[in-house]
Image (cartoon, rainbow, N blue to C red):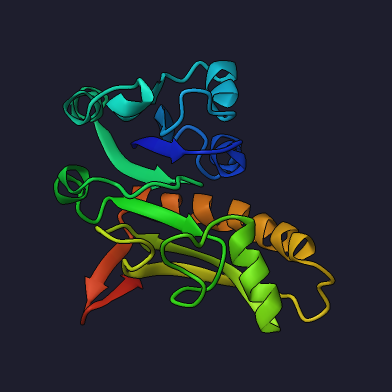
Length: 201
């Protein structure tokens, strides 16, 4: 299966996907897309000889029709948002319905929505005095963090001393969970039953 990974920052989850032994020789990162011209994750793209593009003509990048053509040309089967901070246009979500996933650094539906990304999420979780946080992988729809949840993993943060410490614990789980869900997609083990997402054996 060929995938496209969308990133806005340094791309630590992108690296986790590329370096995953579970995905080796099974899943290929064929395209890397960012909303930024100078995206730190493009260094990872260059180091791994992966074509990379900036999406958005206002940012000096490609237009949506060009992006869709790239997806078709590269036979993209799954789009993975890994630290991508923009809303995905409906032209993409409609064409790739149930084939776009995102990883969020908290246990949705709590601590999600517009403006809730990166350290802002962890600040909110820490300030709430929650004892558990974690990571969520969910389908992407037309709004922030509202798509059906595919998988979650919890982290004990009862003794965390700062949002930064909390973030480090959650990131470690993100790096495990996202490749696992991509593997499930590749194995065609994700189903909708009774309005819920189910993982088949």
